[in-house]
Structures are given as C-alpha cells and as structure tokens.
Length: 174
Image (cartoon, rainbow, N blue to C red; front, side):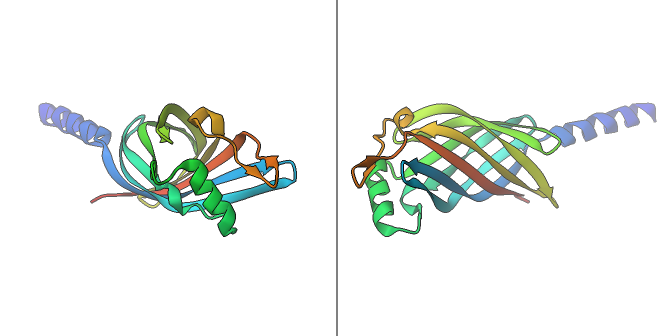
C-alpha cells in the first residue's frame, strides 16, 4: 500500500508540473511623444499560443503591424511607412519564460520588430481569471533600437523613446 501511495504522489507531482498549452489573444498599445504632445495607437491583433509550466514557457505571439490605430488615418499611414509593413508585416515575441511572484510577473523572450531580434523582459501583472490568466505589462524602447528612423511631423521629429504596453488573455486548450 505504501508503494502505491509513493507512486501516486510521484504521478500527481509529474502531472502538476506538466506544461499547459494556452491560446493567447490581446492588444498592444504604443505611446509616442513629440515637442507638442503625445498620442497613442492600439493594435488588437496580438494572437498566438504559449506552453507554460512556470517558469518555463515556449510559444509565439504575433501582431499584424498594419493594424495600429491612433485615431488619425494620416498618422497611421505614416507609421505603416516608417515600420515598412509591406516588408515586415508582423512583430512576434518568441516566449521563453513567464515567472510570477503573487500577481507580479515577468515575461521574457525574443522580440522581432522590423527584422531585428532582441531579448525583452516585460514586467507586469498576471491575474487568474478562472482557469485562464490575464497579463498586463509594458516596456520602454526606442525607434533606433529596431533600425527605424523616428518620423517627422510638421517639421518636428518624434522623440526616439516609445512606451509599449501589452494586455493579453491566455485561455487553456482542452
């Protein structure tokens, strides 16, 4: 009987550690600034799948770069030109880790924008919603880190720095 209990405990521990596959959907928002003010654009196309057994994670979440909406069509057309969306239609995060401490969380992986890949660490929160999770976090970056030239608007150059926010919901695949 004791041997059965040990085997059952081992099996339960192995199952508890098994990675779970999640479907991810969400949005990305950027905040740009220039001497006369700031604006933001939101993109609701973040989609992908992530396999997760803390802290290990693997998977990919991508955004259609042509779908950012700042509320001004001309600005959005200019942004698509700066991003060269015909040549680089997607930005993808290849997830490598997701760690949490209470509701605080850190998402890590290789982010590709405009053909440039960089390791990113995105700090935020991870909250359970039933058997799903909601992640909200962000990071700061610069146009020039991705071989992009900051755009010019009315003879004023947009600041090189950008704030990027990610909100995503991960639902387990059954």
